[in-house]
Image 1 (cartoon, rainbow, N blue to C red):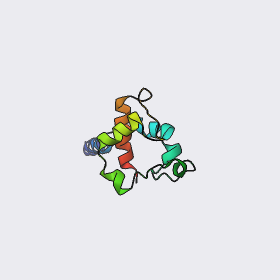
Image 2: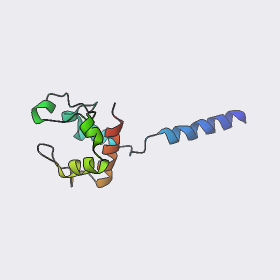
Image 3: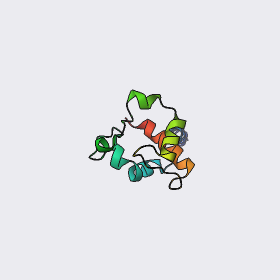
Length: 103
């Protein structure tokens, strides 16, 4: 009985430890963002410096609200393409949350 209780407690903790972005956020990031922003979000890719990609770890980006990041992703800016109509609002919100976890 103690073993079942311990397992149940562990399972509950594991569920609550999962980040609150959708399961597909990492997949969307990999398919839409990695080529310019890189897997770590630093923009150190062959394309990144050519188009002026910002490092997601920079103080300037860290200060931006999720709403600003959402708008930049949805509407695009400069060489950043707009993902309006390509991604749902929920997907964009999830990707913004995912970006905040990159370290």
